[in-house]
Amino acid sequence: MTHLFLRAFLFLFRVVLAPLTRERSFGNVPQPHAVLYYQQRATKGGLLIAEATGVSDTAQGYKDTPGIWTKKQVEAWKPIVDGVHAKGGIFFCQIWHVGRVSNHAFQPNGQAPISSTDKPIKPATRADGIGLAKVSTPRRLETDEIPLVIDDFRVAARNAIEAGFDGVEIHGAHGYLIDQFLKDQVNDRTDKYGGSLENRCRFALEVVQAVADEIGADKVGIRLSPFASYSEASDSNPEALGLYMAQALNKLGILYCHMVEPRMVNIGEKLETPHSLRPMRDAFKGTFIVAGGYGRDDGDKAIADGYADLVAYGRLFLSNPDLPRRFEMDGPLNKYNRDTFYLSDPVIGYTDYPFLPSDASAFGL
Ligand SMILES: Cc1cc2nc3c(=O)[nH]c(=O)nc-3n(C[C@H](O)[C@H](O)[C@H](O)COP(=O)(O)O)c2cc1C
Image (cartoon, rainbow, N blue to C red; front, top):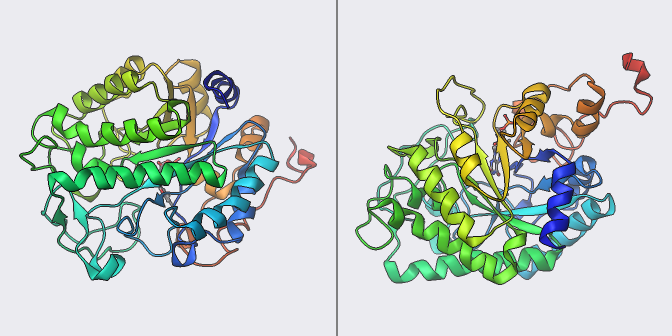
């Protein structure tokens, strides 16, 4: 798909499925039940972003999250991607490395998780707001190991294309590995990947460059959350960080930048904040996606005001498989049930949220 063609598609369809970890990919392999889940949320021309998907065997920190580094995983993604395409949807894979948000049990040979730092995080509420994560003290990556991790992202992107995805979203948000390099409250390196803003952004930009070189910049997006502080990843000047990244990404010509609203200091909590993504939106020349606490009306307003090109919806899309139709008809919304977000069950809380009846007049619509 060419850049312009994809742009036109994205322009027409504003409601995006935000990436949502669902912990139903047993043994890190996507499962057949994901075919129905994603297909339910697919519409002609609508963009879906798949849940965070590990780039290597060191990338995991949560149970049963999918990967895309083995042949078996690539094959398992294929019917899921085909299902979305059969309904005319556009499907990007979010590629991910958790870095220090992990523990020995998730790591090959029980080794320490890798990070930009060797500072551990306190066991705390997980980024998703549910449960307590056990974390181990990370091992700081040596400078000469960093290209190997960048290569894992490159190969994962290649694999995503082989699986049929239309592109990848690099997960640079929410306190995971890339964010652990970006944020000055985590990154305490003294090599070329630490210290100045330029140095802290180097890892993220090298990942983007490697992925863009591999699959084409027109198939690459990145998610960033400069204002968030999940897993102790905060920055003393988030606006400067977001702006620097927006400008640097322009030089790489990628398809989109997906930013999480400053009000989402924690997933699930919408806080009042004087900050806005407007400066980053104005600086970035590609498609700009925003996410975080949006409903139908403020999403429409964000588009009408030119604040964003697209709005990604997480929890509302999770619980309303036909969210674009409900928005179109101003229909009632199903409430999401937090208790089933991460249940292993292949149906409950996953594919059993009801659709509006095809005869929506039952709702007086
Ligand atoms: C169950 C759940 C899983 C999530 N998993 C991911 C993920 O895999 N990758 C990611 O970047 N964000 C993830 N998020 C954050 C969402 O993409 C989104 O930014 C957040 O829910 C705020 O948007 P909302 O208010 O529309 O739900 C997750 C959120 C929830 C509730």
